[in-house]
Image (tube, rainbow, N blue to C red; front, side, top):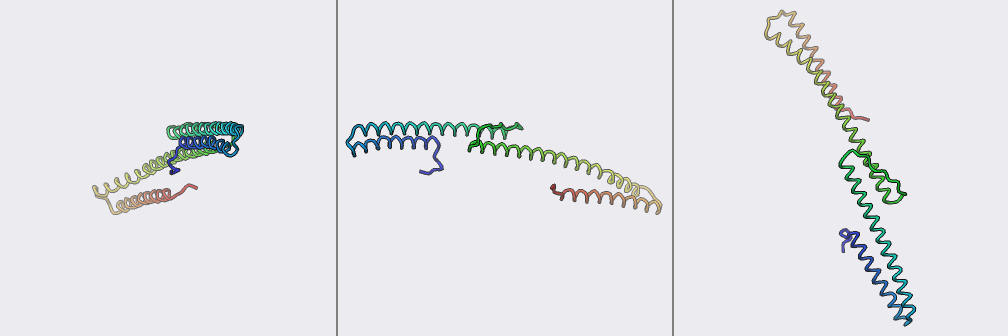
Length: 189
């Protein structure tokens, strides 16, 4: 039998069946060895007691596992569905509490990360909007100067003045592009 495919229910049933068989075999073996009815009765009582304790223990463990898996599934569903705060557990330090506590911590880290990403996205959108606005002005100025040079007859002094103005606008565009490149390479600490 492969242990990966065993369910908790199957394991509990197998263990209970094994203890039940053992509780019958042991007193019968004692009776055949001693031929004493009192030993058989004591053995049967002891076997019934042990089997009862075992069944109670397995039922307790199964119930705890079921409650834990239900709580774990609910916690995971809450984490995936909305921005709700994870439930706080006040249980004593045990395996179940440790797993739930770590999942709650993971949930908090994921919420903070999600919030940080949203803030960074908003900051990036604001930066792109600002750069876009800053780029529009030099482009508009360049178009205006270009149109003037192409459509009108301008003296050589005015041409030089326009070309210097165009050079100044190109320098602004170059500065903005360099700033954008540096910003894109920047990694937050």
